[in-house]
Length: 82
Image 1 (cartoon, one colour):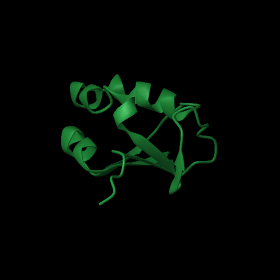
Image 2 (cartoon, one colour):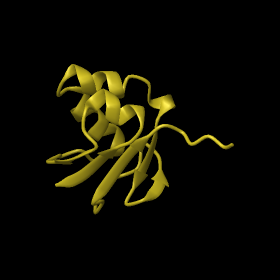
Image 3 (cartoon, helix red, strand yellow):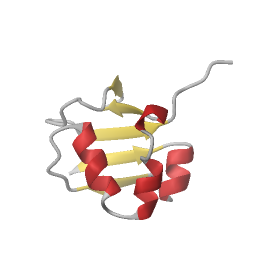
Image 4 (cartoon, rainbow, N blue to C red):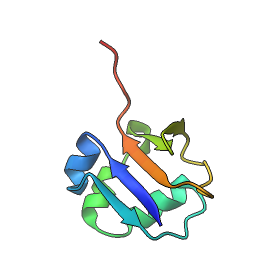
């Protein structure tokens, strides 16, 4: 099981801030494909991966990163300075 967290507009599109996911995904990209196959709201949230960032166990990561040993995945839009 992996804890998946959603922030900002990703959370708004999916409709929940976090969930526990049973997955056989090897990488973040595989997990995204599993989520997109669930329901249209996930498809909408993950339609443009270039507009998203991912963190694994609170460390910024890439979509091709392996999920082995990961406990938490967080999806969020890029941070903007100000």
